[in-house]
Image (cartoon, rainbow, N blue to C red; front, side, top):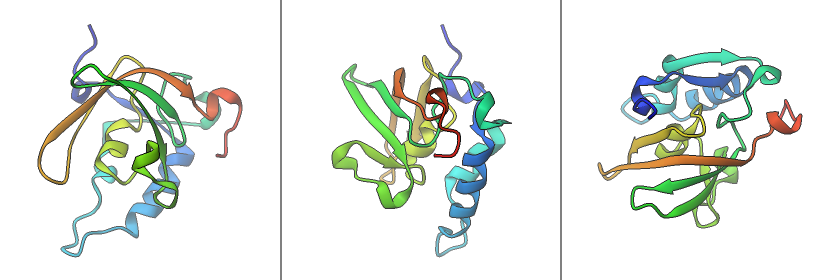
Length: 138
């Protein structure tokens, strides 16, 4: 059995880290609170895109997962302009996006929704990961 997600280090692409950090500085809350996504970068290691394992959720990864009720869901991680939850595309700046980034197949991503409820997805597989298909700059 895998350890709870909070006990596992995440893996981040150096390129994703740079882009998301820059984006996050533009999305500071009115009270000065930085986006949650910045906190998760303390939970893992950075790798060059070419060194990224094929089972890690990176930007533009398409994830197949099970929700808390065991239902299969498919989500894609994207930047805010491309987000459309009705189409399964979630911004990395959203709670679900921050929860998934850097997680591996078999792990459970957990997060707190804006209304305070807890949610999670157990990652079954990755339908597409840019680095695994040789795209290191997507």
